[in-house]
Image 1 (cartoon, helix red, strand yellow):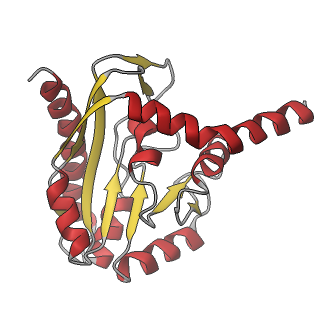
Image 2 (image 1 turned 180 degrees about the horizontal axis):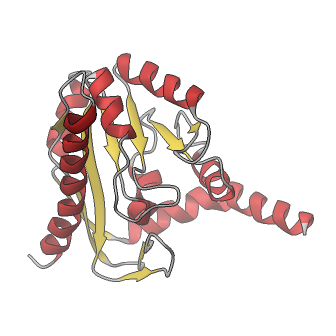
Image 3 (image 1 turned 45 degrees about the horizontal axis):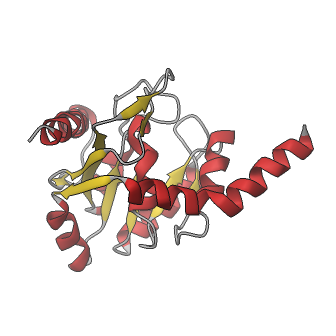
Length: 218
């Protein structure tokens, strides 16, 4: 069993990135709404990219080589993600809502206060599906970072029977990669005000999925 696991890990290390690149390049992909995000980055403004767990398939390739800090679960699934993205220029940090993450939180605060970028899966690692946890909103409130929702919709896809309804676009499918409008969170929030902003961000990310699906039909 150990040999098989080591063989699978070695195959992922060697073939994972090339196969992911070929998969994504096969898509007839239309990118929409990236201008606001890129404008913030040119201005040196910190951002927190939000991607649902079920929509994360395209993110490792999409955001590669930008020096982004992704928060990756310290689970076995998270280890596979780390092996896939390790040589794509990410500043990988391990932690999740279900694991002790004080060091991860401090690292993300430091990165954003320096004008950097963090990527968070706000309903991970165990859900509930499409329910945004408050961590990303707290980060934005403490650092002045903008929240950037992101999603990808494919005309042809496989949807797994997992808790997150994980989506894998079919090879050569039409697809829309959609960036939402930046969400600015007021500083110093707590209690009901923080919850209201959490709900606003959750709604924006859910609405983005619907917009991406609609754009596939246009």
